[in-house]
Every structure is written in structure tokens, then in C-alpha cells.
Image (cartoon, rainbow, N blue to C red):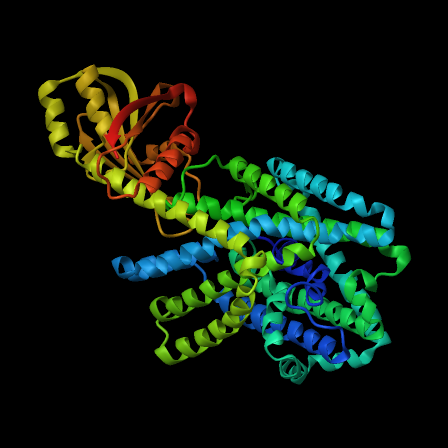
Length: 621
């Protein structure tokens, strides 16, 4: 497992800062969204109690039952998330894994990128908008300050979250305590609001408002945004600390605060304009804005880190081009930074802030991606229960149907927002999924063409015996995607240069459908004769392969590679348009663009640049 052994209390503290950042800051905008926008209601006592009841039961059922209890049971060597679930199903079903299910999983995973763009903007903007309440003179400064905070947030990524990570937990503890205090104080002034804990008031809201109440679920769901983090971040903290954090601090604090907001609106319906900041005493408004901004930065950090981690998983599983992955901590394996992704997210976040300018304008864009991911997760849960856990049909179907019905209701309600903002994250998700599929299919086509240029290993060894090329000192490492054949660049090198290193390593890096591979199973070394070795390195999809480091481990298998006398040979494929291709022209163009701009294997595999030689080959594509 990727997380380092810590005490339960330390893991609980850490999970508060990472897992519950997004969920914990939803009181800033969730209740407010119910009284503004396309689907909105008047702040009457019946509506306020009904909405408070809906929010409470959403927290209890979606976050408490579905994600904190059942979804945390779905793990692959301690790792959670959509890609680990897909890996579980791939191992269980093999070639029987249907293409539709893979596409469903990819779409759910791709939607995280839509969330990753919207979450920082709506979270930070909601917090900074509190300045406009303190004084009207600061209203024009809300957008510039938000942009400045976002720039600082994304600039900070290159420094590594480990420098400030130890502050995340305590800040979020303070945040949840303040949420509970503010809510409890308001409840004390209007204790009748506790009636909202009775689900009858939620049902009464549906009865009173008819079809409007159904669409209101699209706003209510904002209280559970970030629920996927419970599952995705399981590998860092484990299920028990996450459950303890949720049931003993996060959920009670959120419940008190939402009920407190409802109580305040019952006392003064005008408080519906800013229900969160209406709870804050006037003399504490500025400190509260500062604390809220810090909490939203933490919430944003969690989703940004999640995007980085998922990108690495997608690259390792062959669904995305190679990117430069920078480890920002020597102690925590999961802390990484991807410059290209970071820059694109910053540009997108700044553009959204400057265009939309207010948090309520983003509310419609926020829910659809989250509910779609929840729905995809529920579908995958059924297949894991049936195919991996071997549950009987009845319990697997009943439980999954309950989750799908619950998530489906939120999804259908958010679907009404498709043309008022929901299209944005969906469009981002569709684009990312298209990139994933095109990259996978493109390399499948290239692989078939490269396979035609192969030579069986035994024939190559026989050729060396007969031709006896000049053998130069040192080791030549040839990276290869073939398992039983000679890579074309090795054959090209021998035929054109009539020389070869005294020791030749044909190296394949294989990503397994597991998060991490045990050290004793990492290397397979097979001597083939004539100084040629076949080396296969097995890595997990949560790992970044460091080839020079792994080659040092090969000494235990009888293969000694002196670092200074080792050359690494890489193949560079240049694609030439073919008259006919199995891919449509626009997909060929997209794949060619991605292939040209992918990070070099030398960077991705941590090869010393002064010891790398590239051999080019042209292919009609």
C-alpha cells in the first residue's frame, strides 16, 4: 500500500485535511444555491425545513452509507478509485470485460478533470465573496483576489504539498469546530429546526413543491460534492481513519452548520442571500473570511492532487500520453506534481473566474459531473460485488439498485442544468475520454505495424553467431514493447552499424493491473546467450518506473550494469499519413499530435540524458 504507517490519530487528522476538504467547504454555497438560479424556492418555513432535511439525509445516505461504509470496502491492495476498480474487474474477467463497461469507467474517471477545474474556482470564490458582505467597497476586489489566490495555489504545487501538508489537518479541525459552533449557536436561537432531522419534512417538501422539488435535488447535491474523494484517497489513509473522521467530526459539524443556516433563515428570511456568512458575528467576519479561504485552498488542493494521481494512473495503464511526473516528497510516495496538467488547470480556472465572476453562476456547472461520477461508481460497484467478491445476484442487485436509484435521482435533477452550465464539465469529460480512447487505439494500430518488423529472439541470437558483429565495451539497453521478439531498433542498429555492445539488455517495462508490485516480483531476468539478456520490469499503475534504479536490482539476478558504461537506446516513431487507416482522419491527427508532444521515454523512465541515443523509424499511419 502507498501510505506510510502512522498512528490512527495522525491518519484521522490527515484525512480531515485531504479527504473532507471539498465536502467541508460546501456549506459556503450549497444552501445558498437552493434560493437562487434556475431551480429555486422561496425561503418559507416549510421549504427551509424541507431543504435542511434533504441535505441531512443526503449526507447520511450518500456519504455515510454508500461511500463511507460500502465503497470503502472496494479496494485493490488498499487503493480506491475508478481505475483501481477497473483493474479489479480486468483481473477477474480478463478478455470477457466488456467494452461498454470500460468506456463507462473511463467516462467517470474523465469527469474528475471537469471537477478539478470547477472546484477551486467555486470554493475560493465563495470564500472571498465574504469580503463583499463586510464592506461594499471591497466588492470589486473579489474577482482579482480570487485570481491571485488561484495563481498562488497552482504555483505552490511545484513546491510540494508536504511543506504545508502538516497544517492541513489542524486547519480543517479548526474549520469543522467553527462550523459546529456557528450552527449550534443559531440552533439555540431556533431549536424547532431540529425537526428537519425527521425525513417526513423532506417528503413534505416534495409534496408541496411538486416537480420543482425534484429539480431542487440538483442544488441539494452540492452538499455531497467531493464524496468520490473518500474512495479515491483510501490508499493514503485507509478506511478506518476516514470513517472515524466522517462519523465523529465531519458529519456532526456539517449537520449542525446546515441546521444552523436553516434556523437563521427561519428567523430572518433575508439571510437566504448569504446563509453561511449570516451565521458569523459581524466582528468575526474578516477572520472567518480568512479561515474560509484557507479551508477552500485545502479543498482545492485535494482535487488538484487527485487529478495528478489519476493522470499518473491513466499514463501507466496506457490511456494517456507520457507526462513529466515530479515527486515532491521523499517520504510520501503519493505526493506528485505534473507541470503540464497544472498549467492547463490554472489557465482554465482563471478563465472561469473572469467569465462567470460569481459563485452562484458556477453552481449549475458543478453538480452534473459529480452525480455522473457517483452513478458510474454505483454501476462498477455492482460488477465488483458480482465478479470479484462473488456475491449472489439478489444482494448485489438490491444494494446496487438502491445506490443507482439514489444517485440517478440526483443525476436526473442535475441534467436540467445541462444547458445552463452543466455542459462545461461534461464537455471536459468527453474530451478527456476521447483522448484516452484515441491514445489507446492509436498505439494498438502502431503496435500492429511495428509487430510486422519483428524478429524472433532465437533467430536474432543465431544471426549474431553467424555475422559476429564488432562488440564494443559496455552495456546497451534497448527498450522494447515486445515480449518474445527483438525490437526493430535493435535489429536496425546491428544491420546498419555492424556493431553491438558486449552486453545487451532487451528491456520491457510492463504495467500490471495492480497499484504496486512487490519488490521480489519486480524483475524477471533471462540470459539468452551471446551476451544478450531479456529483462522484464513489472510495475503497478500507481508507480513511476525508475529504470536505472531497477537495473541496479538486477545484480541479484546475475546482470551487472555499470552506470557509467551503460547506453540507453530508444526508438522514436515518426508517423506518415497513409491512404487508408482503421482510425478516422481526425483521430489520426489527434493521436499524431499527442504522440509528438508526449514526454520522451528518457524523461519518463528517469534515464540519464547524456547516456541516451535515439533511433528513428517512419511508419505509415
